Image (cartoon, rainbow, N blue to C red; front, side, top):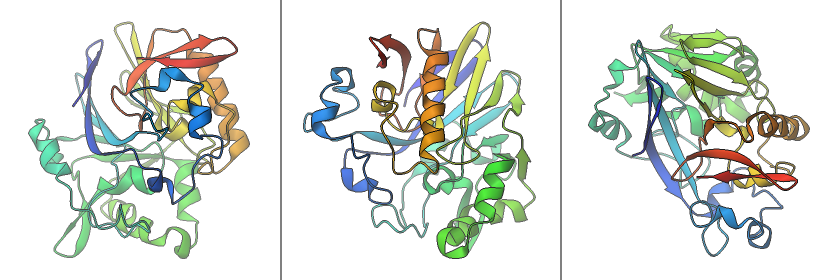
Length: 286
C-alpha cells in the first residue's frame, strides 16, 4: 500500500492484483512493438516495470482520494464473480473489500466513484453479488462517468458488452446512483476530469491540485510506462489508435519537466513519478 500527499489531499493505493504475465494481455493482444528487445532500449523501465526476461509488470489497482470534504475512489478494478472471457480474471474471489476496510475505508463511507472509462478492469467493483443479484458496492456514492463514454458503451450490442453492462453498470443505474457528466467535470475542490480520449471515446484522466501541488491519474491513456518513452507505438486495446497516440503526445508535452506527480492506473509499484524529457522522447523518473 502506497500513499501520496498533494497539499491537503491524500491519495492511497489499493491493489487488487499484480502480474508479470503476457498471457494477461490475451483479451486484446500484446502491443506488437513491446518486445523484450525493444523494451531493453529503455533501461529506466527496469527493475520496477519490466522483468529481466522482458515481461511487462502491471498492477490492477484502485486509488482512494481523500479531500477535506469527500472520499473519492478512481476506477474499481475487476471485481469478484464477474463473467469475463479470460480464465485468469473470471469469477475471481479476492479479499478486495476486506483490504479496503483494513485501510479504514468502509464501502459506505465512499462519496464519489470516478470512472476513467468503462472497460471491464475498471468497473468491476462498481457492484457486488449479493444473494444472487448485483448491487452497488458503494451505496452512498455517486458514480461519475463521461457522457460520450456512457453513450458509446450503452449502445454496444449485447454480444460485445452485454454481460459487462448488466453486471457492473446497469445495477448502478437502476439504483439511481450514476451521474453522466462532461469531460471537464469537477468532482470536488481540487479534483476534476481531464479529457484524454482515444483508448475509449470518452476516456478521462483525473487531475488533483491542492496548495500548489499537483498530480494526475492517467487511467488507460498510458497503460504502461513504456508508452512514455515510445508514445507512438500502437496499442491493440485502443479504440482509436490515431487519437490515442495524439492524446499521449499532448499529455507528455504538457506534463514533461513539470512538478506534477503522474500516477499510472496500471503502473506497477512505485506507481508514481515525473515525466522528464529524454533526448527526442521522454522517460518516467521514480
